[in-house]
Length: 371
Image 1: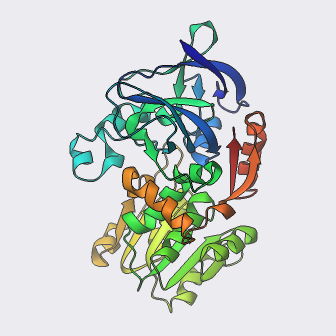
Image 2: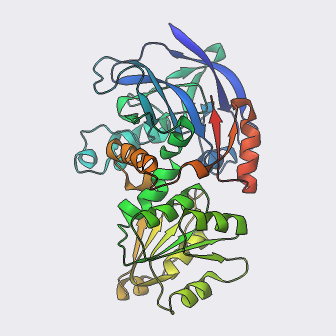
Image 3: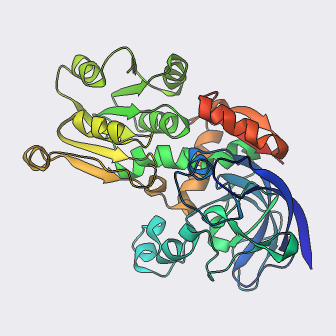
């Protein structure tokens, strides 16, 4: 038996998503769980596909930032039961490969082979459309539909205290931003942190720096409105790079020393290079933003070695979803991080193209679909 539901389907770059009727099996295969999605955020990674900056197979249900309720569990699944509240992870873990057992599940071999190609762990799709089409699910999730069928390790049980709209953001922006500071950079309270880009990921990097007690948190953006939001989330200083060159501002704020950690949260060559160029000796630049296909950067390797600089990639905030997702919910419940202010617009599925128009224009922080 199958379940029919509505989903926003991507069929070609630079065309609106179309809400279509699709279907999924009502009984999960072994190792999988069926989740009814309650909320899904609109992320810039989805936009990369929509505008053709990332190549993707079609048709595809986009969306990878979601939360919902377990509807059914497949044979062999433990630790999940019907009715559990879950946040969905786009890096499920096989829990067996060398990356998983060494504590780096975001680099899981099966994710690299299958989820990164928008398939489930057995290399197959899970959703069908009219006329027998198979439908790909972005990052193996596809949260722009009312149901997802995912590996059990992609559904992380969290407490019911966080509303689904807020909890959904833990599935991408919150974990990516907070984790870039806490897990990847391992920022210490004595350090000065620069965050370039104050979108969903950048603002969460700011509040991650606040969470660990960084002594100075500098936020940089072109928008005064976003910089004001950054102050709310914990920035001690802000720089509008449309009015003052970033290098000048960093020199002014740090007595020409530079910053200990710079987090790039946009995904542009020039801002990655600017993050690296802002470092003090011994500093660390973390690339958390996602770039378009084919982007390259240029750095001076002599300066890197002479000043012991580090340029570090951060995938999903170097997170361990099994422990990090529930921890972030606890931090929200205990008012140590703010998820409420991140949700600036709630929409229905049929408003999704309007939501992406807002994202392109930089309106608000996060638009969330409420199912």
